[in-house]
Every structure is written in C-alpha cells, then in structure tokens.
Image (cartoon, rainbow, N blue to C red; front, side, top):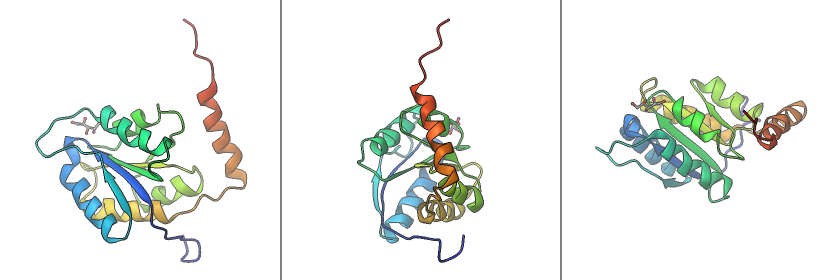
Length: 161
Ligand code: RB5
C-alpha cells in the first residue's frame, strides 16, 4: 500500500479476545487508543476461561448494529473467532497473518472484522496488522460484485436433510 492509498481515520472499534490472548488484547487496546481510535473492550478478563464463539458474537453484533465501525478478535490462532464471526449475518471476518493479508482483507474483501492469533504473533505484530487493516480502504470496482456474492450466500434457504 502506498502512502497515497492509506487513509487514516479514527474508528469506533469493538475488540474481544478469549483467555489465550488477554495481554495481547490489552496491548492492542492501549496502542489503538493512543492512535486516537475509540475502543470498546468486550473482554475477556485475566484469569477467566471463556469460549471464543461468545467473544466473537459480542464483537460481531457490535459491528452489525453499527455500534462499531470495525471489529478485531484475537484467540490463540485467529481461526476459531473467525469461523464464529462469519456465522453472524453482515460480518466479513478474515484471519490475517501478516500486513499483506491485513491489507488485502480490506482492499479486496471489504472485511469488517480482523482476526488474529496470539499464539502465532507477538503483540507488536498484532498492533501493526491492526494498523494496516484499519488504514486500508476497500478498492471497490471488480471486487464489489464478488463481495456482493459473498453476502448473497447468507440469503440461501437452509438445506433440508
Ligand atoms: C483456546 O485454547 C483456543 O482453542 C482458542 O484460543 C483458539 O485458538 C481457537 O480457535
């Protein structure tokens, strides 16, 4: 991403983690608040074992309700929270594992939730990926129709057994 393409705005960001990522989530929250973002922290608390789908649901519902502009979820791998978040209508969650995938999740997929793994990345890398995710615009154009097709999958009738 060139400097011309990066757009820094202050966002309302909903953040949650499970017990595998409490220090990393706290470091990320401090970092993003220092950057000027408004952060809603949905936990979990230190020493509390939680189920990552519950954390994913809290953040996803904040995003689809419009209470937050973007969501960030951290678990051990970034995988479970992503699977759960994508079950919520209106969520396009992406597990990002470097600044390239963080950028592409926005530019090509218009992701509204970034998921990361605290057993994969240190806090500094998580902050950097979050920065890139937040500052990257959606490219639109040919990508818009593809994102529309993703969202159309939510409208499919349930498959009967
Ligand atoms: C918790 O032990 C772990 O399973 C969770 O953080 C996450 O990695 C699941 O995908």
